[in-house]
Length: 592
Image (cartoon, rainbow, N blue to C red; front, side, top):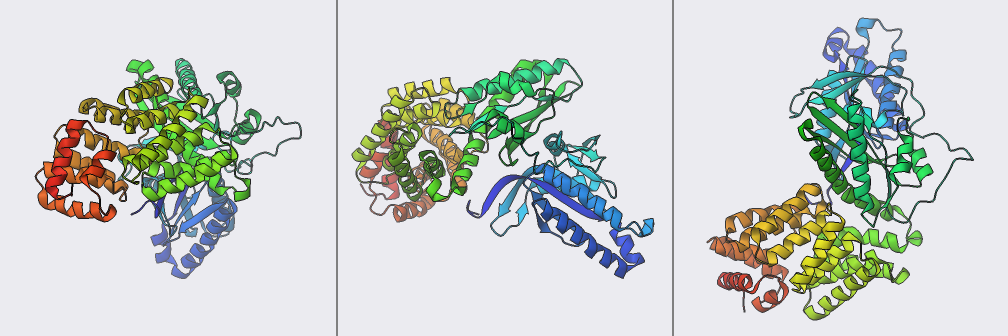
């Protein structure tokens, strides 16, 4: 399936099922059908009233999704209350009662509106754990709605459920009166309001200590301080200082109010829970302007080396936040009206196309970036991304005028670095451009500076891996690509790390291994035709000539008239590696 057909997002999932439905049908079929129709109406009314969407009402079950966990829990409690009051005159043994499960997790949504994924499976398993007329939620939901709903949560412990490999911690909801958390409290006239910066802005709130162990308070605070310090080194973020964020420690938090008081769009909150010698950290990123959950994760580890665990949590969270916030900012820019777009908005719109590494997408990115630079000619991020877009034209054989593409790439990237020389991404782009120009020493220096400024910059580590490939250092290259993958495991740019690992195996003569990674990259991005250049050469190296000739036809369809000379001019490998690769392409039938 193509990426345009599906999209992955974080939602609250409500799953419900009628308890004892078969027994009720056997007792009185007509009355049961009528009761089911009435119950479905209640579900639909309350789901839609809380900005949810009904996905399915097959048989006696209901599946729906919500943007907010608070909205899902609000709807669940209102449904149970309405169903209970509506059947008060029905004998207890004839009442239709529903079990409801709510989970906050990822789904994959198809273009036709259908959804699937582990998040739905977990919600269904939670529903099966609920009592008739009751609600059971996951730990992610309980964390998300804590302090926002008037409900007591009864810890049901970790539950092993069918077809889910890891145990699920479940909580029963034991109250039904909610505060108006979905809309959020209206701001008073004297409430502090700060304007949002024209860049991603974030506050990292103190993590809750759920362990009952005061010693874990220090660990939780240390994790927050580490994440804050790491994010503060990312120049493209506006990060609230630790002292301001810690004023909310130990208080019930209204995310919308925090966003207004601190003047930030995003709030990161989390919790720490210790059991025996294990610790679990749960984190979630929320858009404070509308309450939408942008990203969530759970990290488990051992307390044997608590400081190592703290560093690992900080690295993982900070690394994951960069692509998560970037994606959220891109979506926000696309929602704005064209007449309201700033240089920042045009740059955010260009961002996804910059990283696709496809010819048409790169051209689209440049158009948007030129519009950004027409508004602000000295905007470093737009200059930097334009530089990388021109570099792509050269390295992927998208132009016959290689020198002009390289000249523009370097001019844009250098100007960006002059204006913002302590930004990790801008230095990484400058390093990448120098690598395309075969200035490997300078490229290495720029990338070393980039990862020193931000050790969690996944793309910088990836480009560093390419410098190692171009230097015939295969094992060092693989190490850097794997680090990039570990820092940002869900990054849409990761296909290029698979290409990089494949190239590292290729230059070491491990052609079958290389082809495994080339295939994985092509499965993620079927239209990266430039990869066929390396694929054909690797197939010849592996002795798979029939396949090589098939792939060569695909290459020449994508690049009519391509020659070995043009390919040699574009690709950035050592002379020895290029000689071997071009010889294999010549054997496959690519003309000189």
